[in-house]
Amino acid sequence: MIQLNFESKETEEYYRKMRRELGISHPGRWNNKPCITREDVDNYVKDAKNILAC
Image (tube, rainbow, N blue to C red; front, side, top):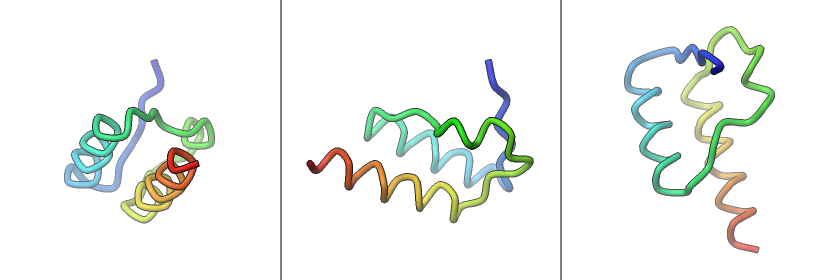
């Protein structure tokens, strides 16, 4: 299992909440990212919502 490193506990909790609500997982590009920011999560959630709306 991949260990994701978030910039803060709040960012990690937000990601987990949105993942449950949208039924999404993390993007593969995060696998090698040293730190995942709130902006990364916001952008991914926005992209996922757009894809799911189609």
